[in-house]
Amino acid sequence: MKEVPYNQYLKEVDQHLRRGGIFLTTGHDKINTMVIGWGGINIYWGKPIFIVPVRKSRYTHSILEETGEFTVSIPMGKNLSKELAFCGTKSGRDYDKFKECNLTPVAAQKIKTPIIKECCLHYECKVVYKQDIIPENLDKAIDEKWYPDYHTLYFGEILTCYETRDS
Image (tube, rainbow, N blue to C red; front, top):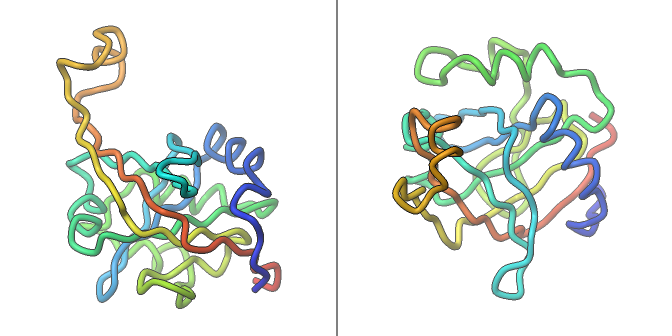
């Protein structure tokens, strides 16, 4: 593992979010991963923050509420399109996505939630703030187009970022 600055791959993170998504993993005893296509990295409170939106209906939401931490794993040049498609359309309530997709959970460095071995870039994050989308504060056109079920926005302080090119 090679630690890298959190902002070294911002362009690549953005590209993966826009086309295919990235893995968001939560859990300690029972782990789950889902795919996000929205989110991003910014600076809040003088810290690098990975903002991840998770709909309240998602299995990941309840786990994230319990643990208060998550990892983000990005394939970076690896073709995991089948795995991303499966994990983005199936629920962890019904499937063990790691088993179904032959994904390998690996211990993270600073938190209990694992990373995904098959990916090359990883962020470990601790939730420092969360905010539910408030429908009446949302632009009506956005609400009508995107929201049958609202997100909670999780602001995760990036505790470490690293590459695992040997996966």
